[in-house]
Amino acid sequence: EVEFVSAAGDSKNGSWKGVFITGSEASEIRNASISGAENGIAVENSSATILFSKFANTSSRGVYAKNSKVSISGCLFEKNDGAAVHTDSYSDMNINDVKFDGNKVALYNAQLAITNVQSSSFENNSYAVLAPGRPQAAGPEPPLRPHQGRVRFRRPGRGAGGLGRPLDRQGGP
Image (tube, rainbow, N blue to C red):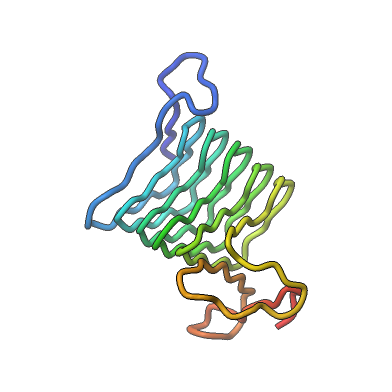
């Protein structure tokens, strides 16, 4: 495991900027522990795969993506002061087998962003999912208007590409 922390002796949340990924080459982060950063990992105009890593005590975001394609699997996000994961404009985020525990916001999905979540747990977060710009409705989801973001939750099983079946708001198939 590789540990990323502040060089400051008595570090606090946000005491260092974090890891930034940009450019056309794909990146992979595996078995990392990132704590005390402003943003654990920020991916802009790039692509990244993040595997079996831990993000804790960030002041802004655990993982942030803008205009990027990011895949997160087998990770833990805990006690992050802002959003554990923030999918921003023109990003495509895939989250699988991730635990969100004790964060202020577990998942923030901005307009113009798409996030797919499968086999993940949300516990003790102030907010599990924030998706501004999405209409709130008690019945079936209204159709997406152009330029809106989307969050899709799936459970394991058969479905498109073996990714599982989408869940409706009541948790049924």
